[in-house]
Image (tube, rainbow, N blue to C red; front, side, top):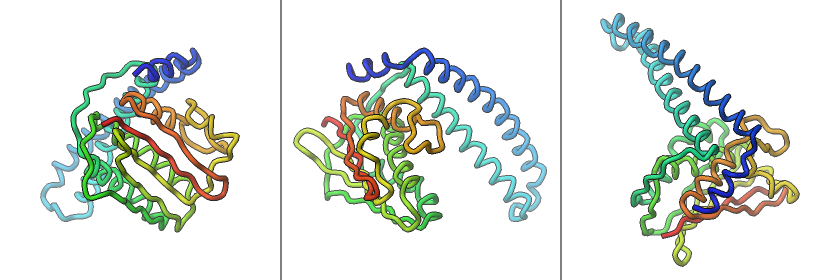
Length: 236
């Protein structure tokens, strides 16, 4: 917990301004999205005569996608607040297996589109961990999304869970582009992006904060051109 406070204290005034701007943008987008959802639901009501027709199916898809986007925007706002040190933590005992399976299922459409294999290796039994499910899922999703992003088409991604003394260790391995040694100390900093990649540059910074919020640690092993292995541990 102390590490988390120290990390959030390192957020600069410029970082806070960016987070504030992002929060305001999320609010504006959610307002517009609400109008889209309401309009689509009204349209769906008008088209209920034939539930199997293409217009009805497309409208229902719009509604589902809009609700999903609304949820993601809410999560983004929550994560921005976490970076600013504004967060709540309400842990409960969770089985890690179902959490991993849920997150890999979310990522499946992405890995399938890139013809990547996504494997999960779990021992027959693992102890429960005390965690907040939303945050634990975000940690895994961030690491897996990164692995897929930097792994070429046809590559392999593996999630491994194991118990090491009084800690649960999760490992996300890929055979992608790897991270140069001189950049490995920088990738957990807010807004830093390896090779100028696209995105917010917040993913791994948020991941580190969330792991430390649980009293855990995060580290990596990587060789440029040979892939990466990200590890994080949670106390049992």
